[in-house]
Amino acid sequence: MLKRIFGPKKVSFQVVCPFCMTLTTSDSEIDKCPKCNLDLPPLYKYAAYSTPPLPPFFLQVGGYSQAGKTVWLSALTLMIMRMARLWPGFFHQAATQETLNFIKDVNQFVSSGILPQPTPLGEQQAYLMILSQMASWGGRSLVVRDCSGESFTPLGFAVANMPYFLYVPTTLLFFSINDMEANGDTMDRLLANYIHTLLSNKVNLKQMRRNIVVVLSKADTLKLPNNLSDYLVNDQLWTDISLPNQPKPFDSGRMNQYMKVLTNVSDAIADWLMYRDASAAGFIAMANANNIQLRFTLVSSLGAPPNTQGAIETFSPRRVLDPFFWAMEFEKSRVT
Image (cartoon, rainbow, N blue to C red):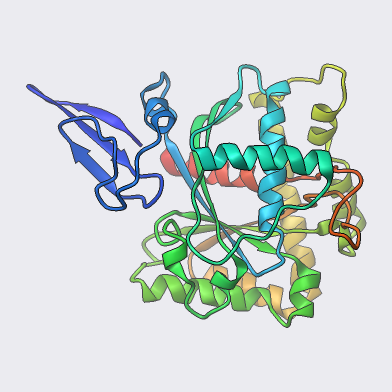
């Protein structure tokens, strides 16, 4: 967050770099991060001076290869762009050229049906989107890192490729259950790697509680209980932003009601996973023992599996906002 600190004779400036999370204080406005030497995006700085300010919200995304992280981020971007129909006064702004290019790719993806390419191994540019006047949460500068699945396979994560991982309290962990099981991977092993990485980098889990939003991606391919299957399919938010008629505003009251539903859905998913296999039960027990707060979501970023050419005919994402909503709720409780 960028802010002015008024003293008796001078003004100091503080900014958290959106690329490496370095906090810098200076007597003059800060244009470049002294650690990573990258220019600070003008919109990112301007957002912190707005009234009310739009503080940064750093979000780390993780999961095995083929977990659907990149496709979800594309679907989330589409939903965010269309939420102006539901959130009165809401608008979004891409704060970096890379983010603007990503939005263009999303629009091409929606029009062509050709899926975005998986994230390559290595350090990625930050996805930095200014979000103004969201119901319940106000404005934020959303900063997201999408890392390749190979970064999460070793016992110790490749933290050099994910500079937020050690410092942000909330992580979205994606699991494509069918792909994961076909590749011999398990939920509890990924969490064990997650905990090992934190501990080996001197993160004290007892003193600093972590939040994980579990995202069961490609949920349209799962054999779900009827209540969860019905919830996944009947996504009123997607219906509201897709139809030409004027939808009911998604104000704070409706948002609060939605979060109550999400709590019940999270509990139902956890119950289903607990009895589905030992790996999921071990995942939940391990998180509880290490002061990690869990929430569970179902997502179908496409609405249906792609064809053999890796494309889709009808793009109809389901529940892609749910993980984002949980992350925002965790952030809200942390800063209030």
